[in-house]
Image (cartoon, rainbow, N blue to C red; front, side):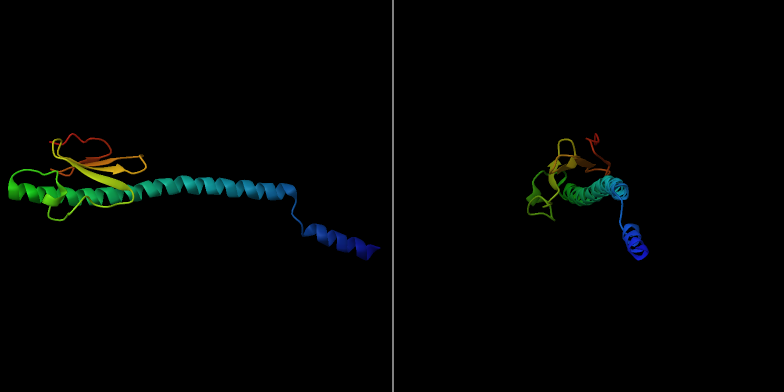
Length: 130
């Protein structure tokens, strides 16, 4: 009888209790939530870097056009580097020569990015370019 009791105790020692399983599930859920929050911030930072890189290139093209023709253009084909607006899965790019900025409108609609053609001031709202 004693050997049967020892085998039964061994089986119990290797099993997880319901409380242990719940605690592990809660810990994994908390860690996953923290990771998702951090992932969103990293993703937005990467998108802003993409937007500002393309906006700087467009502003540079506009400045080259200004030096050559004495004014800005809102037509993509007038710029040396473009046959059409730059293509991005995250943004739609536009030129506002009246306010003298270029804009990256986010496809999902979270944040739009702006950059002044002159001086390169940038922001997430109309920077009030000179």
